[in-house]
Length: 156
Image 1 (cartoon, rainbow, N blue to C red):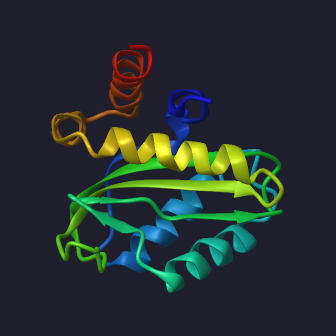
Image 2: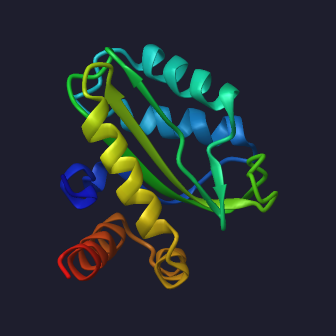
């Protein structure tokens, strides 16, 4: 499963507003709840926040990947945002975040969830890719960048 297969323009935001980690997580949950794959928004929010309490999903290099598993989705669903401002996200490297990828999987689909987390992490570890994401201004441009990067990175 490709990242670009699960991201749609209505689930991508360039210039997401918020001033705190909780603002951003709430906005991302509200965004992903627009998907028909989300059955119960508040259960999704709870799953994301419970995972966040275990350890910050601010993984470093200006990137966070809030994620969780729940029966409140019919299949894996994702949202992506570039924040308007840098956000203190309690990141592992203590640097602020601007790139946020929210991933919600079904309780019983652990394998695909882990594979997507791994794929997202590998892409987002590429500094040049992160820089390009910060320069685009529309959801379509963001998705196009993911498609291009996946095509060049995963089909070698």
